Structures are given as C-alpha cells and as structure tokens.
Image (cartoon, rainbow, N blue to C red; front, top):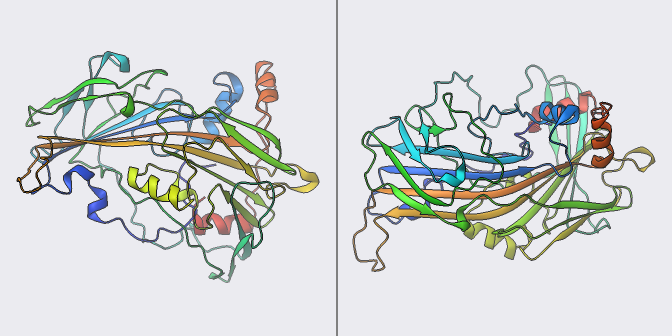
Length: 415
C-alpha cells in the first residue's frame, strides 16, 4: 500500500492566510525569515523491527532502512521518530544554514540545512485522473461507513459508483470529504532543508528536541534562537491494541498519548469490485484526508463537530463484517491508520505586543507541528508472524490482484 494515499478529491486550494504561520498573519509585514519544524512519531503495532518480516514491511511501506529523506513526517510509515526542518529566508533564498540542536536529539551539535537539488517533474493537470493510458472497461463501487460501534448504522453504507466504457468514465453518488488545508512549507531552490543529500541520518528512538536551538548562516537574523519544551517535543508511540474479529466486530484500544489533542482512525480494504472505507468520525464526510497535521483551532472545532475523537477517548470499534471477505476472514490488504494530533506552536521575535495598536514587524517566525501515527493490517496476527520471522518462515500477506475494477479506482483516486 503506498505511503501517499489520496482517497477523496481536494475540494479547494488553501488560502494564503492558512499557508503561513498563525503568528505572522497579524504582523504589519510578514517576517522575512520562516522556520518550519515538523515532528512525527510513526509505529506499526506488533511489527518486528528486525529480520525477514521487518525487511518485508520496509518494502511494502517504502522504508529504506537508515536512508532518511525529507518528507518522511508527512505520511504514516515505518516505526520511528522523524523530523523535517525547512528554512525560508528571503534575505538569502536557498542559502546554506545550520541548526544548532540540543544534545538530547543525539545528532551532534548541529544539523546542516541545504537547498534541495532541482527536480524535473512532469506536468500534471489538476483534477484529471492519471491512468497511464486509457482507463480499463470496468465498474467499481466505494462503500463508506463511519462511527464507532460494532453494528452498521441505519443509512450506511454511503455508496459511490464509477464505471468506464470505451474510455468514458461515469460516476454516481457523492464523494464529499474533508481535507486538511495544505499548510506544508513550500520547498524549492529558495529553501534550505534537513534531512538532505548530505545528511540522511535517522533520528534515534527516544531522542528529544527539547532545549535550545539556534539557526546560523549568511544573512540569517542573529536573533534566530529559541527554546522548545515538552509540549513541542516528539510525541510517544500510540500503544494500539485490538480485540475481536473483523467478522464479529473488532475493537481498537490505546493508552492516552501525551500531548494529544484528539484522535482519528480510518480503515480501507477491497471487497470484490468495491473499495470499503470506514472512519471513527460521527459524520460521513471524513476520510483519510484528515490524517495529517492540524491547527489547534481546527482540532478543537472538529472535536465539537464529532469528526475527531476527544483526547479522553481510548477505544473505538469497527462495524462487524464490513472488512470481512468469504468465510468471515479479513480482506486481503485491509489497512487501518490512526493519528494522535499534537499541539502546533508558533514563536516569533520580537514577541507580539499585547497592545494591538502597537506596530509589530517580527524578524522571524518558527512553527513547530507534532503528531503520532499508527498503521496496522486488518486481521493480521503480528504475534504469529513475529514467531515465524524468527524461524525465517514469515511470508508476506496476500495482496489483492489489480483487477480492472481496482485499476479503475487507482486511476481515479490514487490509492
């Protein structure tokens, strides 16, 4: 399963106000130097870290074993702690810099921030399905379920149908869905990043960013130094467990995650010609598009609207049978993802005056985002697989073949 699933069409582009750090929006002039730090903790509960099964998992989910790369914070992936640092300095676009980091990060005294190499990308027209050719003649359905509980609720599933004949695609039903506003820092030759081609070190497990930081480099403001505390540090792994079977109702439980502001679960799997989707939301319009960093205000709002689970919730059951194939067994390739949303912090210099009448033109802004994610295969016995892996007998789980219906869905939705 790819690490970059997009299951619902993007409703609209983010506005400029959403793409900038919150602290800079009320400034008389936006700060000329912006620093973004994204922290993510990924886990695959029960998945062994070593041996044949661990290598198999790396192949399935894009892991490259110690070859860290920028952007690994974005999507759930191989277990570990990940950090992306982006410097956008209008005073010296793309100029190299260094991030002096605390000893607790266990990556030396500093991290080099370097401009990325130019990437040649083929133009892609927004909103146009990418089939790599003529879409296959096929018909497929998307069945959408939602809400915690072992019983399928009245009015579910919501059905979306798509078919293709002689290259013409027809759809019926609504696929409205929420998406996190695109607030990722833009990267290019005018930015400096870590990790990069010169430094691909992994962040050690248990490392911490808490402590003093300072960014130095040509035309980097001398004042760009700040301290991060426990609230801005890596979040713990999600201690996710399950009970029950997909045929009779499976319940997922977790221990409270430190600093979590809310939770969300999403699962998907193929059943014949149908793609089955489920989420822990109380509304039908939440999909995998919300499995991403969220502003604090959005987390609070979506908890009130029952899109996300409150930080006091520690369990959620999936409706029985929706991910069961023949004889009640789990669908091949079924996958669940969970996210714990951490706090987002913005720091500026000089600090914003309390008096709104006082002019404010900060030199820089630092935005720190945190989250913790977990990913699990539905119906997979990790304990048995781990024992088999120790004996060198573990096998990859069976994956559904790309039949015409699945190819159609992949081309339209990119999953």
